[in-house]
Image (cartoon, rainbow, N blue to C red; front, top):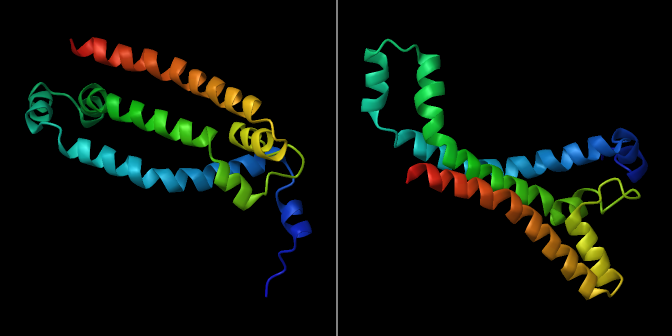
Length: 154
């Protein structure tokens, strides 16, 4: 049996930054498999003729990657950033499972705030209003990028 009492765990992760980094790492490993699969799928769908044309023009492999492959992967990277960013903001279950929301406000995220206000304090209106504010923040970041990506194709 290991010596992992709550005091030992709190001494190991004494700063708020280390707690949030541990939660972010757990969330990253959870979502990386899905995003990685889509990136690998799109990379295999890149037309080989584009890469061969760049090689015939004398481009080095690094230049081919930066000038041919990465621009074709921009929509996938953007989608991954939107999904991972949204999941990081609302990673409610990880915070409660790993730290139980404490100590203090060190691992307080918007989703834990929504839960605490709406269900612990019985203020459903404030909880839902703060969730809508988060939705508008995410939409104000995602919609202009989607518009710019779609505008480049037409």
